[in-house]
Length: 73
Image 1: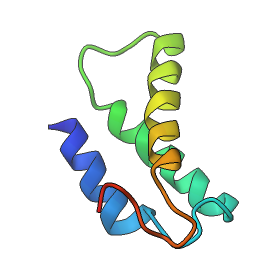
Image 2 (image 1 turned 180 degrees about the vertical axis):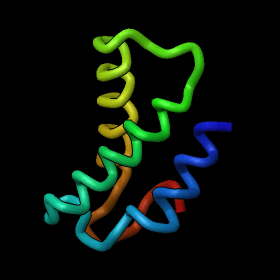
Image 3 (image 1 turned 90 degrees about the horizontal axis):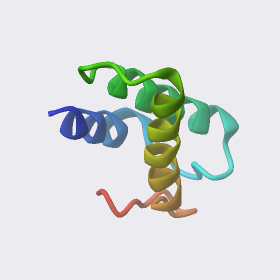
Image 4 (image 1 turned 90 degrees about the vertical axis):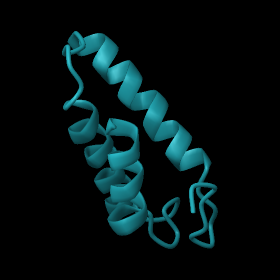
């Protein structure tokens, strides 16, 4: 399942301490979201794809704490 593989990837490699403070970490999370959601079939049109990526990214970002914890852990 795409959602499970994204969550595993984020927990293993992308969710780092102070995600909110490090631009590079935020970019890596956003890229991981986009690359993972791009695996979905059928492909979304470009606008819907970006909307879905925004929703997932915002949820991940909003669920991270300043001390590196996440509700997903």
